[in-house]
Image (cartoon, rainbow over all chains, first blue to last red; front, side, top):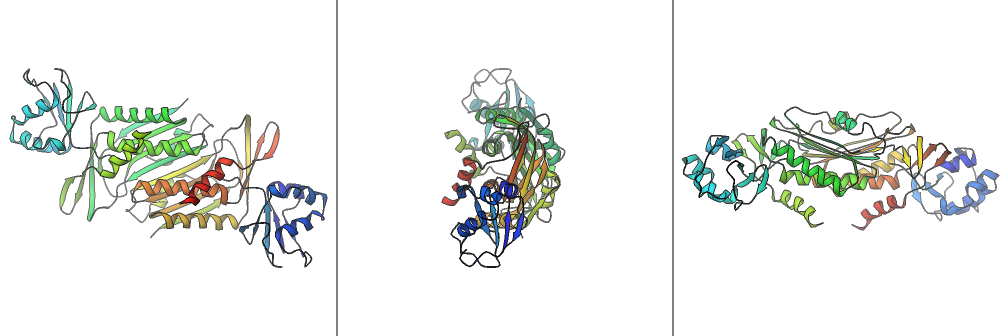
Length: 83
Length: 83
Length: 154
Length: 154
């Protein structure tokens, strides 16, 4: 599973992209975020308030209960501010 | 009084601008148009249907009952089609 | 502070250059909206070969100034630009450019729409189109009168 | 027949050239509406020195294509162009260009507004502003969410 971080999630985590194999009980995006918090203090800080985090799976916006597959590309980021 | 014609009024009348001194009983724009019809068959044809004619006095749109002064600049034209 | 540019001219204009000129001297404008009117090659069923735009020099400029000044009263604009051409034009030629600049896009969009809608029924221009059947003066479109009238209700 | 141009790039763009490219190959478009978003030198009370725009390569282009394709379904467009920059930007720099072309101005205005409103909440870009106080990530504006939501009602 490829996990991408953007904007302040990237700067807090200190990394733009990770190749990960979460355990089988990590079934959806919310569970993945909980699991990621254990990887480092940076992950824990970036994912402390999930109401401020948005996600995309395979480049489509999804809600946190979106079910994950092993080869998904998962992105985490704050609300977007383009234009 | 300066009288200007635009678009098909100009082509029917065959002239873009006339310097005229209408008689004292020509008090408003409608009366001026009636009086102009007597000047030539072109004028009569151009001003035959006043519902198709618009007017401006001193470069402001006016209705046909607008009262005229001797040194007014009066323009006659069809509904505008710019832009 | 508002930059106001109004020009009535026979020559073509460069949209990029004109927009750049509008935003000279200020970094407060976050949004520029522009409308470009082009000569189409069809009108109804007829193929248009060319077009001639006649106008009323003096009154045209005055009416454009009035329109822009109304827009500047109604919306917080940082700049407003109107260029309208006259004379001989061919399909694809630019006829008119309206550009409005504001801090935010709402005002810029609304003001641009207002200026072009209002211009279409208040600036003294007349179009003559030339097709294979000959030349004829274009009639005013009902939709243009309605579009202008909409702004009177507010 | 519709010309669709979507680009995500670091370099600046020339509005005049891009609009000319949009209208190449057709004389059916009578109306082109464009929106240009510029970097302002203030945000709230802070003076902005510069800005960095980060995006999600791949998803950005996909989202822009989806947005344009929705606009093309909703309005009779002859062309639609979106160019969005990323990277380092300074006050007065162009950020985004949206241009829509149609036979008539109603469709062009509405579609242009739709694309910029929709893009603001669906294209994955994030702005970081730099002021005298340091660098901070910009928060999404409530008004942008509302502007995008308006189009969902129809």
